[in-house]
Length: 606
Image (tube, rainbow, N blue to C red):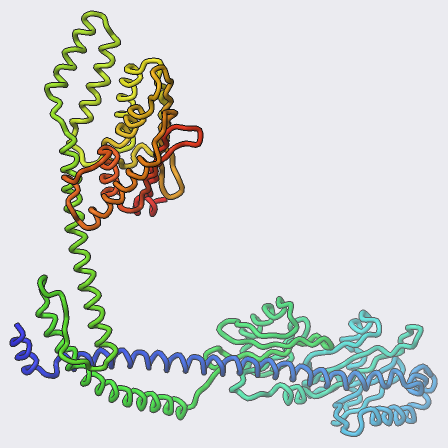
């Protein structure tokens, strides 16, 4: 066998090495691939969260810039309204008609001073029923302005807000036929009494909103909504995804937070809602475009992965070459294993932890195999010994049973029912004693046998014996060795009577316990001497040693045969998990307590 193994190794020297190399290479390649995917995922996730955070910051910053633009426009309007000279000119109806040019110069001067130094405002319109004053960067069409003021569409809205500002989202310039897109801040001109004199509108070009809201495409697309959902930016362009934006606003409006981000329609959406204007600035980007990598990054990752894989495979190749020789020797040694030689021996130590562990594992396995074989042999021997003990206790009741049946019939014929009843009890006992058709007996079987025996003994000691048998019906199907209860009961009768007219009380209890159950037999007899107890325990210990050593217990001399016989059979059936206690009660009388654990299957079911 050994020669064939060597020949096979020489004929194919690389087969096992190649298989080992492929196995480790595949495993390491998978690990490296998983690590690469994990690192890439973490890197992607980091950049994804960074991009979302950048969107949040830009949305908030843009919202603040829009607020700054609107507040500067409102500041100009308030600057006029809180200027006493301005209010005096507006109140004076006569001066508005007679001193229009002078008032126009003064108001323009006020506007310039309020808008200095950058003069960023596109148009300031001051209108009263008597006149209007306008400051604008482009040319004027006076006729068009006059008609626009006459049909001014926002006057009713101004009257409703009672002096508060109105911010108009992107709309065509009301005072120009060129439809230049602008945003506006409007206020009524009122005094401290609430009297209305006219209105002031401050406009700025839509281009300023575009300058604020234009961002790089890598960040995403920006949109600005008014408080009622009107699209402020982008405005008047066909490039805007109006369908998406129209469906986006209801979801924005439903969010209670004033700023944040969330996923909507496969897009990451960052938003910031302004306290000042009520406008909502939004940046949105498809989730699959949040993070973008250049081809150079992918190439660098791929080349790094290939380099690490190549170096690793070279190391694995060297390792498999080193491992081949000791594994081959181990394989040859395994071919020499037999029942007579349960061992693996290597010719030398290769100082390889894996080989030492395998060798140690085989050594442990063979030791356990030896123990398992020994335990199997012991178990079979114990089973044979138990059967032999049971057979020794048998008697051939055939002749006796026929005799009892004859006595029972004669008793009934002569009208002696008591003797007939005793014969029935005795015949049941004989039937149980002679029944060896089953391998297992239960608590219910033993209780029935005990009741028959106790009925006979109560007749034998009529008036002197009182018996209580209390067995939980839930334990009736528990397995119990045959002839367990009756011999213990018989011992109580045999050693319990110490006076001729004594009343002997015997109680038998079979009850459940957590994780098992117990048998308790107590009597009111003379009890048992300490020397006798020690002798019984010595006998039990002797039985244990003989069983563990797999020695013969059938022909050994057994003192107190019934107890030792019972102990041996219970020890074989339940192993070392049960306990057998014998002693005296405090008030007198013998006490036998047997505790039996549930079987592993019963513990799993419970």
